[in-house]
Image (cartoon, rainbow, N blue to C red; front, side):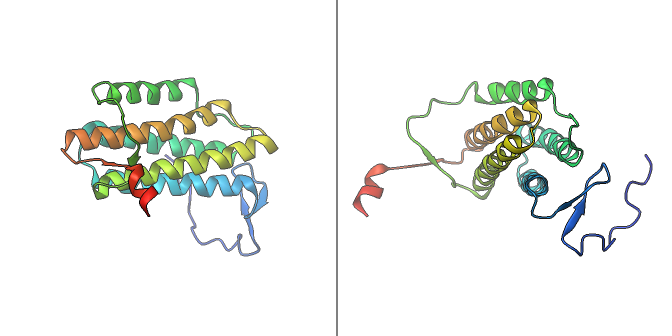
Length: 185
């Protein structure tokens, strides 16, 4: 593999712009650049989850997601490019179905928490939803690969299922919402 980055500090962004892979420059406040940052943040948070979770099914699934998110970032950095495909969406659908297969049905809403690992997975889920909202905004303005939109939508579901799977397989109690607590406050 050739060296892709020979110089990290370029000073080219000092004026408030950033370069895309196609050589164009955009304001750092541009919605596309914002999407790139959101995907990067989600990828970093997934990395934090990976560092804390030793459960193989979740760990390996999250590692695959990290690679997919890097591909999504590459796609966003090259307007008009397509890196995520229907196969990427199918892969996380299949993993979600596999992990969800033996989970008990939900009878109450689950609050984020119960352990550091569960809280991190739920935080990643909420960041994934935020990424989705920004991608929808970019899609409305410029168009986005529909497979990327589907992928990021399904990812938040997968992260929720991963949290439940982790809780079940590590005997970590999930925290359920009790509506009477919120009504009595």
